[in-house]
Image 1 (cartoon, helix red, strand yellow):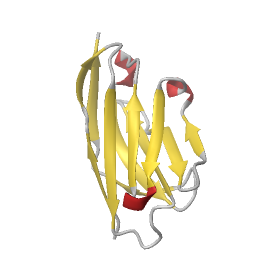
Image 2 (image 1 turned 120 degrees about the vertical axis):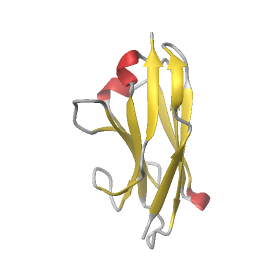
Image 3 (image 1 turned 60 degrees about the vertical axis):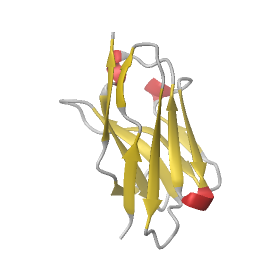
Image 4 (image 1 turned 60 degrees about the horizontal axis):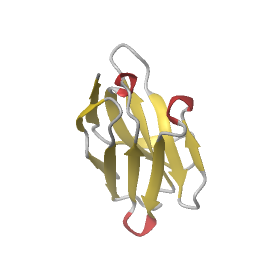
Length: 117
């Protein structure tokens, strides 16, 4: 069974930056798609960014131009560089993996990101 372990969350001031990391292991298919979702209190979980092993990517509209996803395919690790953070980016960020874009099948436990003004 695949395991995803996130790291890098924390507390940051508005306008600042954070970088999240997620290490995957145990995937029979080698995690074809890895990405990040987030869930704020009282809201549904939403896509932040995802990327295939081939480099195709999708971003949520609210983070385009501010967040960048990248992968280290040899280690099934995915990163999320978050710049120009806003208080509305505050959420639990979940690492996810799946067989195709838009279809996460495995989830990490999540890491809290809090942006204060």
